[in-house]
Length: 22
Image 1 (cartoon, rainbow, N blue to C red):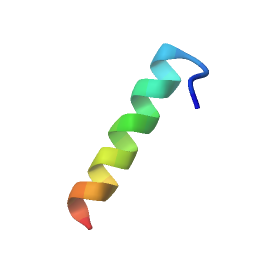
Image 2 (cartoon, rainbow, N blue to C red):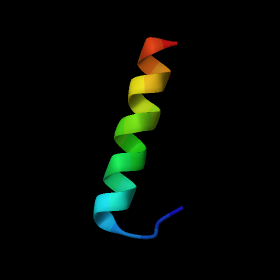
Image 3 (cartoon, rainbow, N blue to C red):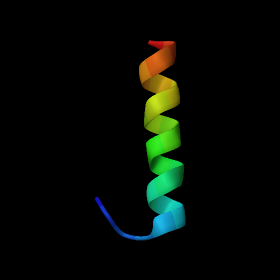
Image 4 (tube, helix red, strand yellow):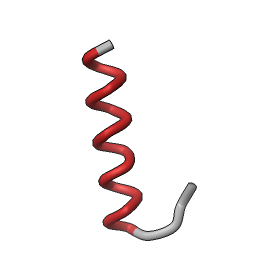
């Protein structure tokens, strides 16, 4: 889902955090 740079980065950060936490 490549919509916007900021949105993309935010999503990636959230997913990365979740992935690391899990």
